Image 1 (cartoon, one colour):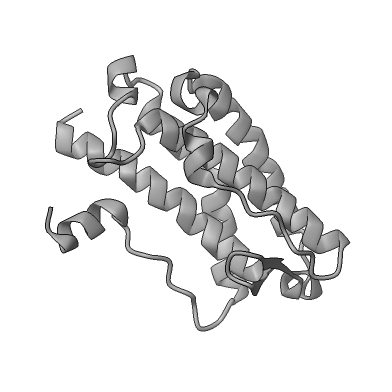
Image 2 (cartoon, helix red, strand yellow):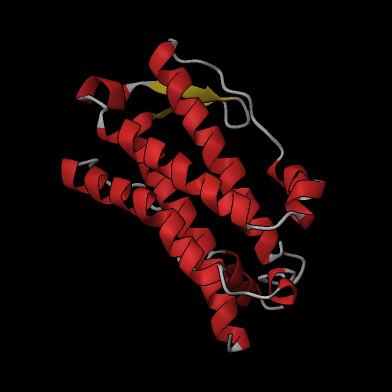
Length: 180
């Protein structure tokens, strides 16, 4: 497969672009995207058949089932990272091997409904917590050991809004391609 075509399949909405300014409007919009993600995801996947859930969004990519479960895994880690950042001084977070998590039995075989329900509660809490962050809290950060870099909470809001939209686009693009 041509590199640009593969890149479009891997990043259907493009890679995350860091904004020049984390304005209140930008952050509010991203928190709203995070809050609405579970409902938008559910709308796209709830009526899919088992065969469709087992379809990878690209060659050598995850199945739709794995994408749904990955979003829960990833966004749970986001929630924990925010909590650590609010309660510790620049904590070094624990990285995880998302590719290995995606291959675990629950991610490859479990029905998606429990994960969709989990995402509803998790995203409610994420948005609630994010909406409560003061200017000082938005500047708090954690250290990611893979990057050996600090990430501020205001950055995390944008990154995880993008992350949900990124994986949602994997699903919607596959549905368009397959005519589902």
